[in-house]
Length: 138
Image (cartoon, rainbow, N blue to C red; front, side):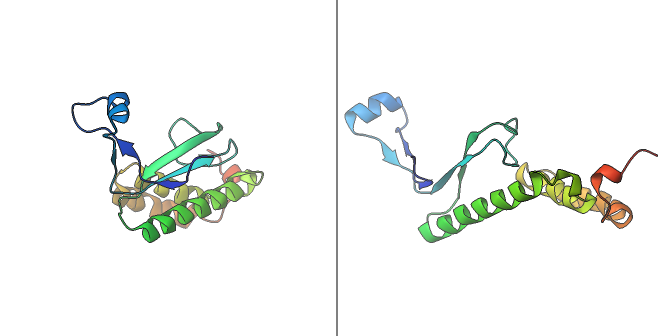
């Protein structure tokens, strides 16, 4: 099994990875990366991967191993939490749950969260505790 917290190797400029590896010239990244296997049932923010098992990789953007471990644990905790909320109890999700997921998606994809919050504040006041399946066009 692959390591979940690692510092990837890369080739120096002007060399292909294969050639640099043969010459022993691979360099190790200064920042730590996380690698987590998402099961098919996981509700994650990975584009185009919902409903399929896949491997999630992301830079922690830190050189400190303890901070990187904390980010890895947070990612795992959020994945379990989303899995619990998105599994069999989808019919019990409220508008507020879906608004929180939408905010998370905006943050992950670097979209304008301020505008989204401005638009959702009124909707959450009206629909906040209602289940999503109970909200219709009528």
